[in-house]
Amino acid sequence: MVELTPIEQAVVEAMKELGATSEEKKKTADDIAKKSNRPKGLVNNALNSLVQKGVIKRIAREKAAGYYLVQQ
Image (cartoon, rainbow, N blue to C red; front, side):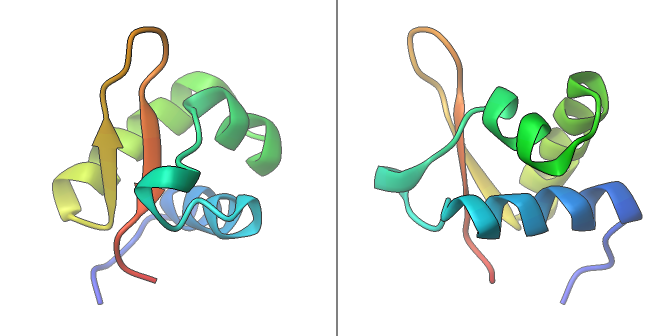
């Protein structure tokens, strides 16, 4: 398992609670920020870091990108 910072852990927990576990169930950074009760900028940084670590996947869309968990 990859080492996660406290904010990354909070983001992963929020994504689990939201059910963002597959591409069909992806969530936006806004959804995740609201659920984790953290500032959106902080959540965006954590999402980018988690993508680099291979914990989540990012799907680019017309409006907001969607994210979902790869490792649970």
